Amino acid sequence: MSADAPVTLVEVARAAGVSKTTASDALRRSGRVSEKTRKLVADTADRLGYTPNLSARSLRAATTGAIGLHLPEVLTRSEYYMSFVFGVIDQASRHDYDVTLLTSRSARARAAFHRLDGVVLGDPLVTDPVVHGLLASAVPVVTCERFTGDAEPAGTVRSDHAAMLSRLLDRLHDTGASRPALLASSTITDWGAILQRAYREWCERRGTAVRLRELPYGAPSEVTQDEIRALLAAEPGIDALVCAPDGSAAAALPVLREAGREVGRDVLLAACVDSGPLAHTDPPITAIDLRPREAGAACAELLFELLAGTADEGAVRDLPIGLVERRSTAPRD
Image 1 (spheres, rainbow, N blue to C red):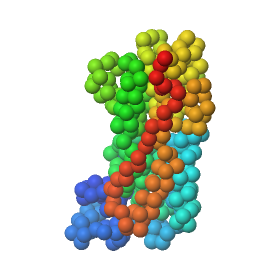
Image 2: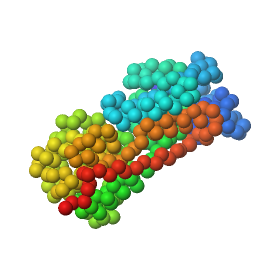
Image 3: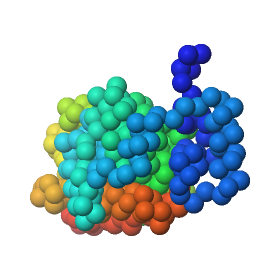
Image 4: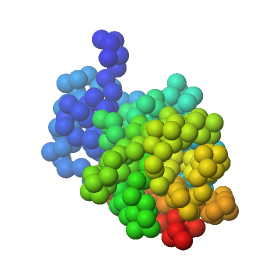
């Protein structure tokens, strides 16, 4: 921070040893904050020379009737994220709220953040400047999955991806696959990091080698297929392939056939993100159902509970997910 830069609310919160939301509530004398904490935050703000954004404060004093939604732009065309969007919209409409989509332009116009009562972040990337801008702003933020950076959102909706991937790998093993490989998603999301860690731990428990290939985040299908070819060349003995990124399992089918592998017989195939097309491939592909529409609705509902004061800051909600078994992991003849 330069000497002339104004002190931010995040800096006040850090110096006072509280969260950004608590600091905001303390300075606005709202929410469930003790008098001791209010005084601590106020004294810290005075000491640092913090000056509140008065226009933002006046907007926050009354509801705007809108919440924001930000997704990783590189994946906005994926079926998962579109379902997530509709889940947020469904829940917002029940509360008579509109939903504003926040894009990269929002990072250069932070005043836009204050025209919202709160924000939902889908899979927040630690490399995304919009995410950092939102988490540094005064509006409450709910994330789908954990944010791996330093900032803390007001609430989080998460699923037990490690347990579900372990269950999927156990299913493959029970079906006869002892050398499964993981086409992994990047660790710039918590989801990607969890899956890689869970896969490595499963391999250690089973006493099998780690066969992992990480895709660049948002990789197009051509890059995905090239990475699968490289994986097959490096690990010709794999007998199962688990594809993490959305759409990568469908992209794997022609590559496996090109390599002379028959899915469901000499190699099993599964996906970490279910979608409509996976039920109609030949053979249909087993996948983890992440329930994206329910995830979007759960994030929005938690945000509204935080705005109403019926949920505590830092609240975490668990969303159950499931496994959809199809013929790509059927027992071999």
